[in-house]
Length: 556
Image (cartoon, rainbow, N blue to C red; front, side):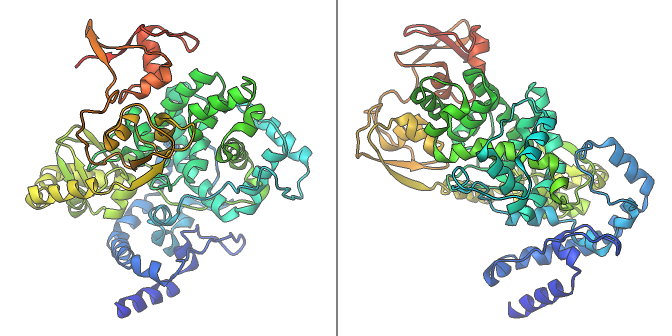
């Protein structure tokens, strides 16, 4: 082990700075700020040993094919022009430098830089608790900020005040290295999100929420166990149609989770009629926003309900505005997007059989880590295609090899990868992943409050604890953060399953006292408030009364 560690250390010391940083090479006339990628301590380096060895082996293996790809400059330029990754948002090319000028040892060594960044970039604390009251100094006068925000002219109106200014200064001046990394990642992900949000006729500015949610880290996991680039809790993810099982967690899929985020925000807008409040509800839930509205005297102005919102949410909306500003005016603050090489095109392959990443890698030459980077939702490097159709994202240079060897790929070592013993081990491992928390009920808390806090369903809390609808102050409740806690058989539970009937091919729910459409939608997996409005011909202002029958979904 010591010998291997010494070899890795020597390799790191002898590599060019650009290779370690994943930075874009620069000429003598133009020097660019490079971010040195360092491990926090010796233990971290040891943990990454195997990954580094595998990555270096991959780079050597792929060297020849990379030269062939980049040697055809005309084809590369045509692909780049046809692709929407940059979409004119950010200019990564230095003046006077062609694509051919960027081919260097540093570039080849940084082809896995996105994977390294996403594995090692934890969810950033980009909202210091003191920003609402601190006085952060800057050499830029307020008039400049105001003028720039007016020119930004977003669909969502951006006010200007001390709090907004503090957040802008923090993003653009106090965290330059982190912001440059975010800018580099945004050139790849934001155009993808904009295309998705456009399908829902949503303001494209909302895509900046992924920046403040996860710093565009597809593998981000918060302390509360919210996961993925859009930071969904378990119950919310399931309610908005994301698949979560032993093999797949679509919260880690940037595309699938972006669709879910768009649907959630659309539902929130239907509730509040204001995009700023919808953004706030994404952070703390519609219940907390409604509570703040009531305490403010029923105002729906964000800045009037601001003092009544949870502390984290008070900083969430200003951070969103600051992110929009920074992504537009980064050049004015001497920020340079970090260069993160990504393939200009990936192909979508439909998978209908069990498929392991090692099967793909063996026949195509793609590395395991490269496959994980583009398919982060598959938890054990397995695509369970026998359950339903799943998608494999494959960089274009490997597509022909996959097609040419498709039958061989599926058959290679399938009895090893998909043996009953191997699959059972995976399923047992995921089921035991539940983190048990004991929650002590506080005065005024309800099951809905507790469920929202931990991102689980009310029915699960009732099932885990063998209780009905009532709880008392001081009562201790067991919570399992991934929703996979043990089943509790008890005949004393009441109200765990919503009372429904079937009529004319639809599941029907009878409205009870205190119900609203938002709460009703939460009782049923895969059902949103927007679904209820459409199915029942209601509007967001429609009132419902006890005894009214509500269509939920088609009966199966």
